[in-house]
Length: 509
Image (cartoon, rainbow, N blue to C red):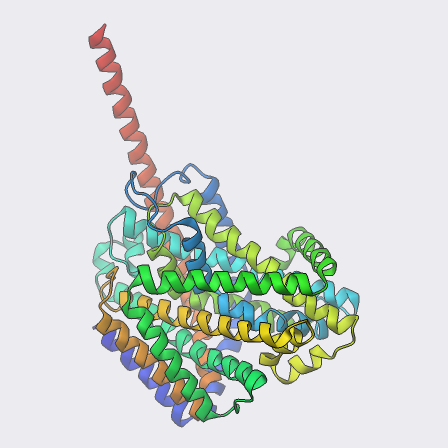
């Protein structure tokens, strides 16, 4: 029933986007604008709260609790684990925005700074760190930790609704309310994946156009979707241990090669200086940025960038959280939180320092008009930057390959998650279910690209973040209740063990 209802809702939105793309986009924009204007404060408070709660859990008495039974060992090596959560979380976004976002902020800076100045560049890098750092991974941490705990520690089904059993009881979870939560999770995931397939296709088309002159046309984009679909379905049918794991490791390797090349061939000293300055500014202003709104000036920058990102991360949380939970069995809460929060954030900081720093250096000191090119076509930013470096065309081919592998891994992971959510939380959904979702996602992306309804669906998926933010708050409360009960049981067991030991020693005397 959950699968059918979710499928019907998804198809209705797709038909809306296909036959009336302008109307869908307008309705989605109004809904999103309403949520930002009236609940922007809630997005900021909730996202900061998720980060604080995640850090609290890592260093609390619950940090030693294992996500599984007490003698479980991690299912995947630390490197493969990092690679998988990084690839599913935001890998392709780093490639897409690595150069483009710092340059966008440089030309339209926050906090009233003057465009195109050194101050604008400092703020650009600081806010890039902010948008891609601890806060989004804080969102992913609380949902994935909650799912992993209830799934592997408590033995519940791998569904979003299962995390609410301590809070609202099993009767409501198995009833209409639990089904509503799971349906919303499937719809949010499907919308996000469909729009990412479409946007990722546009980016791949942009790279192939830059390198080989492939026309930027609907025919080219549909061809790319067909090829990528075949690739990610082949990966999906090989299982989690082979397909996604191997692709994630390959992603990480290619990303590191690309990162090191640009670091060494680009303005190396400038990059390290930029990293140090931006990290210091980010840490120093973390709380102020986290709660910054502009009610007295009525500025729109926060809504356009920060609140958009916070809604985007929350909308993606069901997909990323479910996947990270699936690959995290056997880790302690402290290990999980610090791993999910700190490692991807640190890699993101370094990535933006290398690519964003190189882009800013070319713009500010070499007087290459990258910012103007970004304004005209965001997908060109990375390739125009690489062009300025030695062996630029060779490294651009590697960058395109990285985009494709990230794209395939994200689609593969999403297909796996949709299979789990529509198979009653099965840890290993059947190939039939995964193939069904994979073909459906690609078909939706094709229809929306042809009709021009892609941006409308993207905005609709982000607008759905508001109710899911409320669900995430409920998950945190439910998790806290379960952890306290778990801790009480542990203390009781230890007390009983000490009493038994004391009794044995007294009898021995």
